[in-house]
Amino acid sequence: MKWGIRKKLILLLTLATILPFGAGIIITYHLTIESINKRSLSYNHDLIEKGKEELVSYLDDVSQMSTVLYRYTPFMNVLAKGISANLIDNQEEVSRVLAYLFNTRPEIEQMHLYIEKGKDSYTNYHSSISGRTKNANVYSHSYYKKYLMGEKGYSLIEPPHTIYSYNNQSFIPNSQKQNVLSFHNIIRDIPSDEFLGFLSIDINLSKIDGIANRLYTKNEEEFYIMDEKGVIIYSSDEHEEGKQNKEKWYKQVKKMNNQKSLEWKDDNFSGVLIFDQFPVQHKNWSIVKKVPYDVIYKSARSTALNNIAIGFVSLVIVLITTMIISFKITAPIKVLIDNMKKVEKGEFKADFDSLGNDEIGKLGEHFKLMIAKINELIDREYKLEIENKASQLRVLRSQINPHFLYNSLQSIGTLALKSKATQVYSLLTALSSIMRYSMNMKEDIVPLTAEIKHVKSYLLLQKQRFDDQFNFDISIDKEGTELFIPKMILQPIVENTFKHGFLEHKADSYIYIEVLVKDQQIICTVKDNGNGINEQELKIIRQELETGSSAKKGRESIGLKNIHDRLAIYYKNQAEMTIESIENEGFTVRICMPKDVPGEVEEE
Image (cartoon, rainbow, N blue to C red):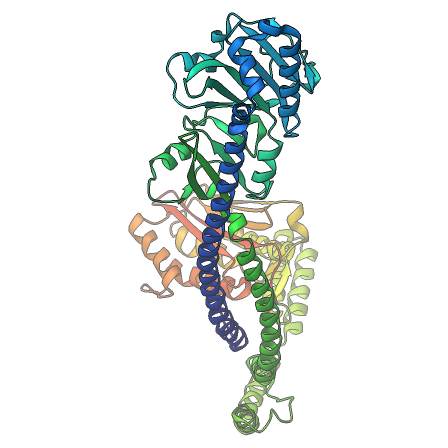
């Protein structure tokens, strides 16, 4: 691929613009990413810190709701003596306390009170207080059972689960069953520490959802709250709530004691994990925020895209300016090249006035002076020599007038017919045709049929010479009759056969000429059954055709070399000539050339 000055100039100026600007964009992008990454981590750490404080405060407040009961002596007396001691008044007291507690927080969905004295149980679902029922199997509940097994503390938190009835007294429609977080509180007599009962409070996750929504961006980031066992208390994907977190990233987070952030990449996520722990009822819960790189670097990429857009506009301006400059510089050079091409074709004339006052303009002036000098030399030397040669040619042509020869041969032929010498007439006609064809200097490219007719006339004369010892056959495609080929391509090959192939007159000498048209190619084959040549001589001839040298003058290679060179001139190396031979069995020449001749070679 050739690179002109114009292309080189455009490429150089383009690179000079793209490389520094592109490097600046890349460096700025990486520095911006680093800065944003630090700011994002700092911001999210602060956000998580404030969020966990709010969560701890809220969860503690719900857990300590049962402590209000200790300040209300009439209710504590009911728990200590049992409902049966004064059934009407005590049930009214229980209803009043449950209604009061239920209305303290809007997120409360259900409350359950169990009184150990008498095994009585009450529920309050959506402000509807159930009737008194016995609950002798209270410890079948997994969280109440934990107290029986010696669990410390006054409140246990059950992870999110579908709301259920504690004593089969609450009617909860299926359409209203939702996930709730349950706080199971044990009530003891102070200061004796005697067990009095349980108070369970079911809350919906609306309050926690409200806190969490301030800590992450929906549809872009992920957010999790897990208890000490890894059970998901809250998730940005509500379908995961209440399930055990078994993800690899969570296991890695649990191992990070002193760090509060972690870069993570897997098939589902690529970004930064920001996490922390906070105490809930003497247990360490975890809070994790997953921020994808796409979110962190969103502003950086936006800035980079703006810079790229500015760079693209700048590049377009530079390219337009470069093209204008390059055209201004290279236009005079192109004019010079066009004039040089005309000189190559023999047209010694400069068709421009001036190319400017710079170095290129000076080059143009010297070019015009050179053309003028060449024209002067041609007029003084070469035209005189050409005229002398033309005069010599006219003298030669006047010495042998072709028309005189044709007329003389025609007269002799007429006389032969009168003398009933038909064979003589045929031979004279063939000879006349050969001379007329050979001496016609006006045509270089002839119809294939004319070339075959010329070869056939030559073969008829040779057949007379060899008598019945020689035969020939000519085969031509119908398509080939309308094609043109260079003149005198086939006849020299046939003549070469008689010079070297049939050195001894032997019976059954034979020449076969075939012309095929195939794949836009004309394939001409001349094959004889003459003496042929051995492998060594065949190798030498092939080498001479390829290299252009001729070691053995007067052999087959001389005529074949001339035809080979003419084909190269006419078809610009698109034609191919191959030779094959077996000693004492014959010689074959095959020419493959395009159907269309590129251009006619003019005689000077």
